[in-house]
Length: 211
Image 1 (cartoon, one colour):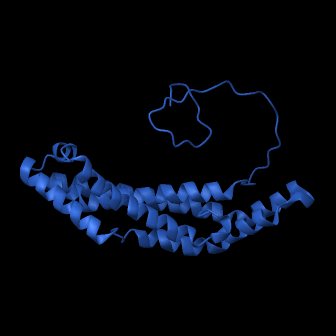
Image 2 (tube, rainbow, N blue to C red):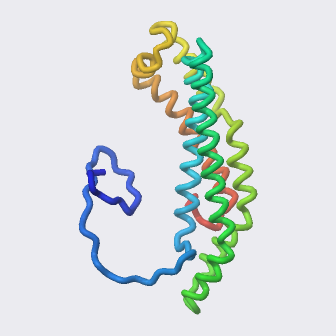
Image 3 (cartoon, helix red, strand yellow):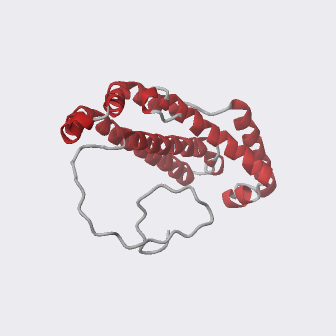
């Protein structure tokens, strides 16, 4: 994203410099607490939490192997994992707060939309509110998930070979991975992320995230 640019939409483009454009001056209706796109909120926040959980797994299973030689490095590793735990709890709490606001959001939506208020949208908001405890349980349980055992073990062996060759030089070992070796690690962690997302989204099928 270029300096001075404000990005107001999602983008999956790679190898691209995103440039801003002047905002168009206009007035539009604003209803605080409406949450007009619950599907997007749930989808993006779930994916963010799942990525944080995968990063935590990386620190527990991979990074720790480079940080066990002394009290300073051990404490540094513990501090990193504690920070990730705090970040995960915070994101879960924030998403839970949005879920708690859904009854009020439905009332605002009905008032703003009148007869044009979509039953599908109202149903989605209600489902998110009602199924939040189940989603929260998925996120909390994700802290114990390790991803696909075969992919995990394969990548752990790759890293161990790298340590035997280069010593416990984290950057040298990771940068020294071949494309195929790095792909093994990527598929392991991405598989964990995808599984977490699916499990959470299965709790709220009415939002249509999996479609």
